[in-house]
Image 1 (cartoon, rainbow, N blue to C red):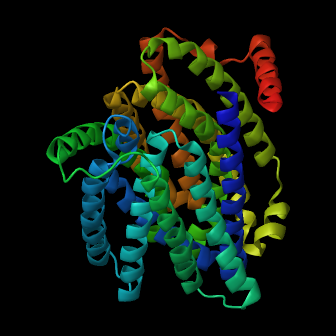
Image 2: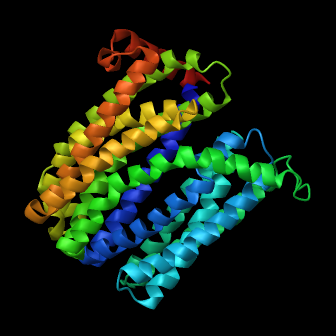
Length: 422
């Protein structure tokens, strides 16, 4: 297991570095306003991708070992197309945006949706190497295309981000079809399609509703800042958020392996002990990373991103408690998702949203982007508290089960030796 965790972590670390490069490129060459425009576009795309998961998402991973991937792909693609069309129309009705913006939003959301569906099916078949490689290629192509346009061609407009994203998702999408075709599944003329659609819809509704609520907790503040402030303020906030959330690659790397193992395990209860051990080490690593990030002075941010972004430092400080809370949240929610208890994750995300809405409404008009960061931390802490309470009820583990001990560090050293030797 340690090799898989290390491989996932290495891939996600490389992805995080490249994602940081994307944040840096947009901030450095487009300024705070341009960075804010990119962040709002990314948020619009991500919102549509969430609703796509109502007939796909993590349920594709859950059902991939049991069903033909081609029977899963057909309804997932059809639903994704419908959501992207309706979602793009909704953005056009709710906000005043150029027609060109809507065109890019529709095309790029479709590319991202199809790519996500394909890679989820690969992951469900334990094709983790292909999954990691394709995702790494995607973010690498985006960073490289933007660097070429900004620094090489001196083309410094928002349109660069759009065209670079076409390249970044188009090529990996084509390659993902090749990886799927190499699997033993073959199209059987639609036999069993209706049952597959019904099963996918049943699992997706419960599994993915919490993701929609969680996204609202993560990104609702962006729309409040865009409304009460401007794109420049949103750009500064997005840099602080990007740096803080980069640390989540630690819990997400371990949770990815944990989820796949839980889905395939016949004895779910036997997974509690390894889950808690990994959770303790994950929480320790996340906390150390957060402390390091908080120690960075504002001058470092201005040197890296530009003079407008020193204001992101207090944003990071206010996000710090929430980032640590998410480490616990991710591990617990992965356990409940892997054991099919989606309602618990839904309720935890609802608790967070009940905090997010009033906190954004009260804090952002007064404190601006610092209020947005504080609202996020309060939401994450509330959601984590409820989720771990339910996890404790289900497993008998108390808060002290999250405190790492000498045995955990010894275990980690042993695993690292074996993983390195292998």
